[in-house]
Amino acid sequence: MRPETRHNLATALTAAEHVRRLAVPGWHEDETVSLAIERLLTIVGESILRIRNADSAVLDRLTDAHSVIGMRNVIVHGYDALDSGRIERAISEGLPRFIEELENLLG
Image (cartoon, rainbow, N blue to C red):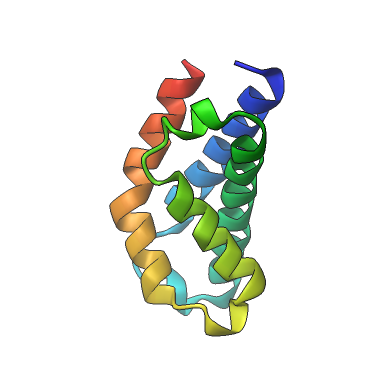
């Protein structure tokens, strides 16, 4: 695995773990926590986007990679249409598996 790919995986994992810790029930009612989670999800998505551009073989090993990049794009470019329900579903349904996949890739 390329060093920059490993770095991007580690960055995505760290940010995703922070999201998991912050996403307690009612998180979307706290603007500061919501903004922090959005920023962290942007970091996750940007890290995966960089992997897509540099090491597509690794990208193929992440189940929801394209959805993660899509979430990043919505947060960055469509923030005014951001749906906290969509973010909440992504966190509760996809984040645990995504973190596990990142951990497996990093060994």
